[in-house]
Amino acid sequence: MAENSSPQSSEPSSQSPSDGQPARSSSSEPQPTGIRAFLNWLAETKLYSKYKPRARKVKIASQMLIGLILGVLLLAKAIISIPNLLGYPFLAPFAGLNPLDMVAYALFFSSGIELAYMLFTAGPDETLDPLMMGLAAAILLGVSRVDFSKVQEGVTLLLAVSALAGLFVIKKYLYIAEEDEEE
Image (cartoon, rainbow, N blue to C red; front, side):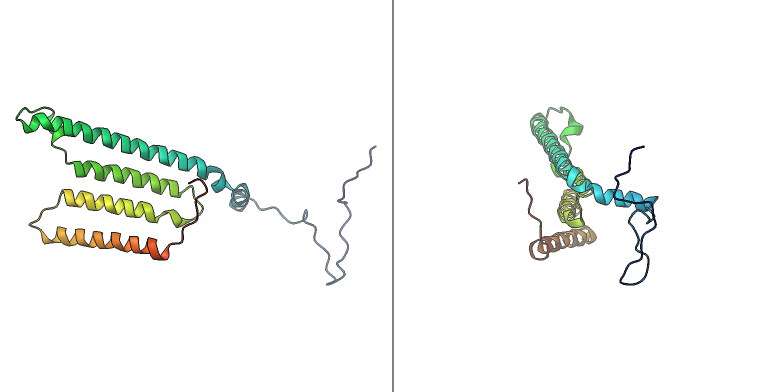
C-alpha cells in the first residue's frame, strides 16, 4: 500500500501554546451552505469584471441601433411631410407624429438600456446618466404636449427642469467618476 504524503494528518490537532485551546484546522470548520455559499461563490468569481465589458458593448450597440432607427424615422417623416404640406395626403397618420415625441420615446428606451447596464456594474455609480436622460426625455415629451392654458403643466415642467439642473450640479460637483479603461 502506498504511503500517504499529504501534509494533513487524521490525528486531532495539538493544543495551541498561547491560549491552551485546541488549534482549529481550516478543514474542520463547517462550509457555508445555501444562500451563503452562493453569495461566497458570487464574490469569488468576480462576475462584474467578467461581464461589464460585454455588457458595455451590448449597451453601445443597442443605443446606436435606437439612434439609427430614430434618424431613419425622422428622415422618413420629413420626406413624407413634404407632400402633406402641398395638400396631397400621403401617410397622414405617420406625417402627423410629433418629432419631439419620437425623440422622447427614443430617449426613454435608451435610458432603459442605461439602467439595465447599471446592473452589470459593481456599484450604483452609473445611475446619474440614465436618470438625467430619462428626465430629459420626460421634459421633451411634456414640452411636445403642453397645454399653455393650464398653469399646472407649466409648473410641472419647471420643476422637472429644476430637477434636471440639480442632477447636473450633483454630477459636476459631488460625483467622483471612476476612469474608464476602454475610452
